[in-house]
Image (cartoon, rainbow over all chains, first blue to last red; front, side, top):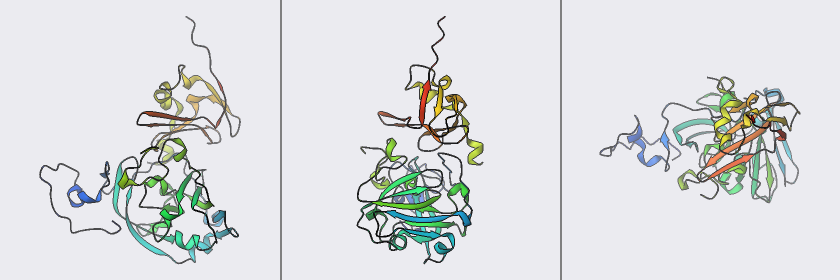
Length: 209
Length: 92
């Protein structure tokens, strides 16, 4: 799932899907469609525009000494390039998106904690909750580049979360920090009917799914 | 198209609010819990393309109201509304 699979060339009989649907029939989680080259922008508010000199990233909460990184300090952390499929709860999926950023393993490695949950907080007031086990071991990043270029504000720049194994509302735009906690505190959409975890392969869209 | 150009006025929330309220919520005057601005709900800003509908204060952009439809449920958050002034209906 984490790399483009060019080997799937079968065509199901009677398949009347979109242009590229045949190549990736097994790659779409249930209920999703392939948006192709598009990249929809869904926003719950105006687009914040934070300049790098005003940007910082904090790891706080139940930690042994909170951490604050400036933009420059963030840039000096080890960087990873990732190619992943993304799945929005509004049912579009986009295959093979390419990003660059810092693994959450690296950022969480800056603190000592026994917390099991985090709440990501963002410019504009957006929040989303994540279990630490869902973002550990190379499964989540704070990314500042998309498709080889700096991430545009409309897509969450200067930096956003990337948690491709969960619905894309978890990949919070304009992320500014992580609050670590022993208890699960629901975020912006999770307090209003959306699933606490949001695994697209289990179709965990809404509370109770 | 920018996010700002897709922003709607509060009347775009009329249909969704009519599912919940017995009165026309767009003419109800709300006081923003963030900055105190009082205005009809219909004058606020609506962001409708997210996973839910978000109504924000026309002055400070604080969240005044959120509404989400999920299968079998309507979820309403008015924690950003400090007060709601509902005019009586037309008696005629």
